[in-house]
Amino acid sequence: MKTKGNRKTKVNIVTLGCSKNVVDSEVLLTQLRGNGIDAVHESKNDDASVVVINTCGFIDNAKQESIDTILRYVDAKEEGIVDKVYVTGCLSQRYKDDLEKEIPDVDAWFGTRDLSRLLKQFKADYKQELVGERILTNPSHYAYMKISEGCDRPCSFCAIPLMRGMHVSRPMEELVLEAKNLAKGGTKELLLIAQDSTYYGLDLYKKRNLAELLQRLSDVEGIDWIRLHYAFPSGFPLDVLDVMAERNNICKYLDIPLQHGSSRMLQLMRRGTTREKTEELLQTIRTKVPGIAIRTTLIAGHPGETEEDFQEMADFVERSRFDRLGVFTYSHEENTHAYSMKDDVPDDVKQQRADEIMELQQGISLELNQDKVGKTFRVLIDRKEGGEFIGRTEFDSPEVDNEVIVNASEEYLRIGDFAEIKVTSATEFDLYGEVVR
Figure 1 (cartoon, helix red, strand yellow):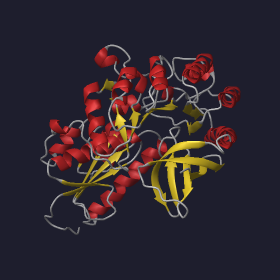
Figure 2 (tube, rainbow, N blue to C red; figure 1 turned 60 degrees about the vertical axis):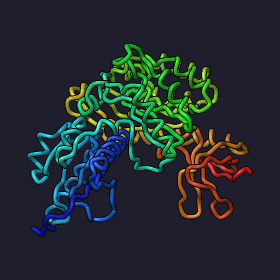
Figure 3 (spheres, rainbow, N blue to C red; figure 1 turned 90 degrees about the vertical axis):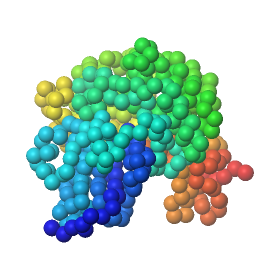
Figure 4 (cartoon, one colour; figure 1 turned 45 degrees about the vertical axis):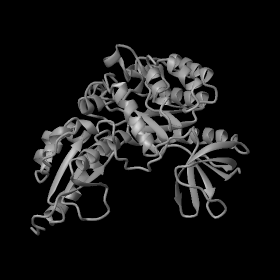
């Protein structure tokens, strides 16, 4: 085996999976640099002596991507390109014992709450004074903020509690400090994330305290947009809507994963609600916050889903007219409640149902976007690609929602600035516009 000998430690952190993993990688990056260690995120150069892979273990495709990435860096170690490979995150938390046997060339495995132990590999200490500080890996004008960790919900299909543990809220003071630090660094948009954001505060304050958190974050100078993700419908705290309606810097946007539109399936999924209650909640949300954009995710092909159940979900989507929607095909995950049920919907049927829902949503999205033509929106400019500036309205989250596209040959815009954009045309998932001076 080739080796580069005793070279100076440089760490490359590779992140797979969701925005929650991105935040974890940013915290690790901040701690390593705070300890004087040369660390980078997703370096394109082969100059790191140590690679830390932050894995995802959510569904089959994500697990396979994580395993493929681990094997790629193990091969790089064999070739002498890197000295050590460490693996952390959800896949490692869930399958550590099996993976240690199957991929013995990984130097160490860590779970989702093993940051201090991981730092010790670098003879580094967890620096308490860095709490509330974070080096961002995405453009600095927006930042994900994880308000809690873990989940107490018993959803049949979900392995997140196995990987992330039970719900733990972060103290409000810590989150406000982090928001102030981010604002000083130029962050204008906070994207609040959690496994279940509406559960926030129950453990620390003995009540759902998301509304007060939103108020306090809204008071932070320099934060123009606050965006709420991953709200659970059962027990939704309605006082959140009052804060959203009264505060201009809280986006009229809600990401609320509903998972299905059939009461029978919601019961099988152990979601603690019905289609009727869900529709009533959606009506309340839209009444209390007029003009709000609602994003949801659904699952096609959960065990026991009949053609009738699926049709009920399709009808629900048609009636609800969600602004944004995504669909997962059901993944049969070990040690979940649904794993004891027969995975009785064939893969091709799962995919066909998912495609059908997305085709339905495509038509709804096109109609809703066409209604925006001729209207002017405040747009946050995210990036420039080729001859186009690309941004988002307050109704859109990065990477998953609509984008606003402006011709760069006719206009000059600065990344991270807001601009008034008049929509001139629209497709199913994009808006095209021009700057209003």
